[in-house]
View 1 (cartoon, rainbow, N blue to C red):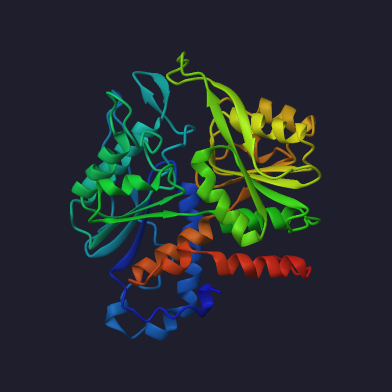
View 2: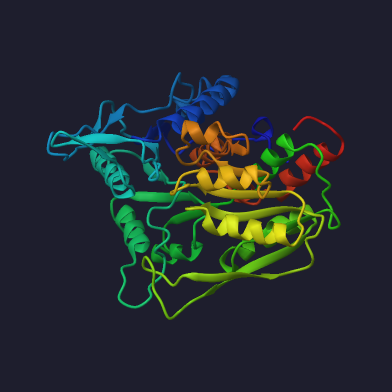
Length: 394
C-alpha cells in the first residue's frame, strides 16, 4: 500500500519544483499545490542543510505565469519569475469552456485549440531555461482523432510531436481515448494514468449497501473500445463483465459519422444486479443513457455510470430525466476537467477528486522516482475494499 508518508524519497530532486497551472486549470492546480506544500513541510527538516535540496520547502510551488490577450484576440505568454534550473510541471485543462476572452468587443469562449495554444505560449516563455518540462494534460488534446480513416488529419499525433519539439520531456494524461497514440513520440515519456481507484473509492463512499460479488453486481462496457477498462475493473472487484457493441447504419452519415441503429448486449444476465457502466468519457451522454435503458429493460437493479471525463456537451436534461425515471442511480466523473456548479449540484452526481493523485505523481517524478506502482492501483483497491467490507471509514 503506497502512502505518501511511507515513501522514501531519498533521490536528489531533478530541480527545484515549479508548478504552472495554465489559464483554466487554476482550481485543480491550487489543490495539487496544497498537497505538495503540506507534504514537503512535513519532510523538509530531513534535508534542510543539504544544498541539493535548496528551495525544497516553499509556501507555494506555483510559478507566476500569465497569458494576456490583445484587443484583436491575439495573446502572449509571460512568466514573472525566474524558472532557471527548475523542474517545471505545466497543467492544462483543454476542456474548460468557461474561460472567455474579448475578441473585437465580443465574448469568445476558449476552445481546446485556444487552451493548447496557451500551453505552447507558456512553454515558449520558459525559453529553454528550466531543467525539465513536464506537461500534465488530463484530457489529451485531440485524442478522439487518434487514427486515420481515409483522408483525415492525425491531430493528436501532431500535437504530441509539437510539444516534444518545443522541449517537453514527459507528457502525462489520464485514460487516453487510445493510448497507442504514444507511438507518435516513442523516444519521450508518455504515461496514460487510470482513474479506476478513485471511481471505486467515490462509489463506496456514497453507496453503503453494495454487495461486491458476482451474484449481486456486474461491470459493463458500453462499447467494444472500452472492454480493457471494464475487464480490469471487473477483475479487481471479482465481478462478471459484459459489453455492448454498437450496430451502425453504414449506408448513411449523420454529423460526420454512421448513426447507431442499436446497442447489442453480450454477457451473462443482469437481472437483479447492481451495474457499473465504465467508460473514458461522457460526451453527449446518449450512448450511456441508451445502454442504461437497455439494462433496465433486462431488469438490472441500480445503474452507476463512471467516466473519467464528464463533458455533458448537450447539457444535463437527459440525465435529470434518466435519474427521475429511475434508469440511472448515480454518475461518477473526476475533477480533471471543468465541472460546472449546476453539475456539482445534481443529486446523482459524484465527483472524484484526483488532485492528491496528481500531487503524488509530481512529487515522485520530481525525485526521479518510479511511478510504476502508482500506475497500477490494484493493491490500493484491495485495501479500500477490505475497509468497506469491515465497515471502516474510506
